[in-house]
Image (cartoon, rainbow, N blue to C red; front, side, top):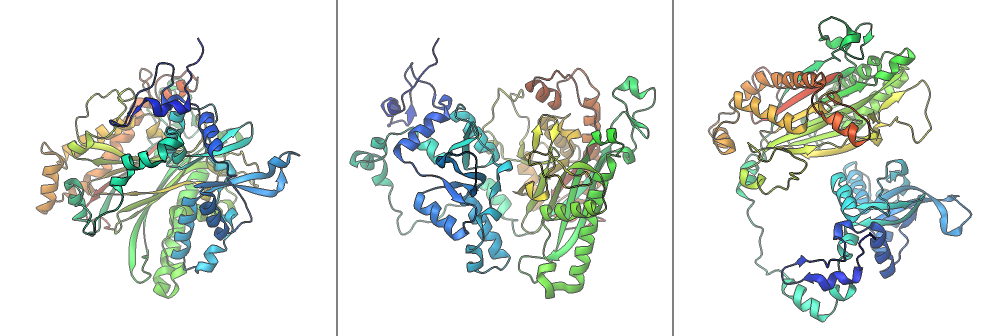
Length: 585
């Protein structure tokens, strides 16, 4: 049977403007099934603008180009290099820059005290996303697939690549425009029907009050938050001082390994004090990180622990030295007393590891918690990561979209939700990107090795009561995220952080001054321990479909059960008061 076809111009004929519902005729494809090549064809038919800018251009030129050409993003090209003799292909693509990149760069430069002239004269090539990090789509992929990619990764511009050529840049605006003809967007009739009654706000317009469930958090938004931290670390169950057994039989009759010194994972948790953004007051920040040494180095006679352990140790050393310098200089030298970002910390630590010629590689995830602004900033390379669990009012959480076909739990039994999951970086299945050193610089752009400025860097707004889990892949490969949330909920219930009254009772308890911060500080290590135990248990169970097994099968690899591995968990509980005996932030 021939594939179903649809005519772009017919969408307007089958959409009911009264109900805003779109009913497709039998011979038409669903909108999400339409190929991106059709969207680009429609876009370029109406208006063709070459979305490129030379890498030597300044930020001023990039802004003008964006505005004049009405572009959200542009491919950055090197005019001095060519990919063929064709004049149409004059210039080799070296990266991507978007209007969002330009705004972020301007904000960062202003914070650094640069003048407007200095900002405008910065080169585009120093701010772009390099070509080897650009996320792209293909012409034969569907609208639904590309929308999913853009939503999951939080990107607004998606280059469409076909046989080594960028055929165009897809934006959310393009996807929206595709469903309407020019006659449906313009003209007197459409203006009167859709626009005229929506133009202009009255002079007494004001902002609405936030919803009740938001107001409860805003009431304490100016108060600092505190972080209670617990750490647990389990080595590979079949690991000994002599190596790693492939299975229980190889390992022998010994008890399963429990010595953390054998683990190729490493971690750190460190408090440091730096100047805040005002440049006048000192602020305490909590840094934490995990690294997972790559075990295959063992085949070359290299101890996989060396690199990961040294990388995390240097993170602590860099913070100690910076904090010491800051305490001596104070506000006299703001440039050397400012907060160190996670990516900057990773970069400085890596350079020190490299300088000592430590051979090896590891994934790495480093974060810092800003208690005043309630922000968790992090940088991640590879398949370690962070999840944030949050209690959300049942009326709100019931409206949150869930794909029940992917979630076997038909009903959620609590208000605890997965609020955030960090993006991992993989070259291919079971092949994460990593930081590493072989003894010499690697120039291959397709290498698995990445630098700190290649990391996935982001920030998450944190609320009181949140549970933050930072861990290596030993946890995430063996325990489903929903199961992690269930374990965290049981921990909360057992310690009375959440009871039968739900978050309303919890909020009332907070209002009455009963924070249970001390109990949180005493018991949060137990949560980290339970998660490591669950990962160990699942890794040895051949009857389950672990997250690793499910992903393996999706990549045509037969695998059953769990994935025995080292596992490190840093569990954090966000509270409103500092616990006795613990370091408040």
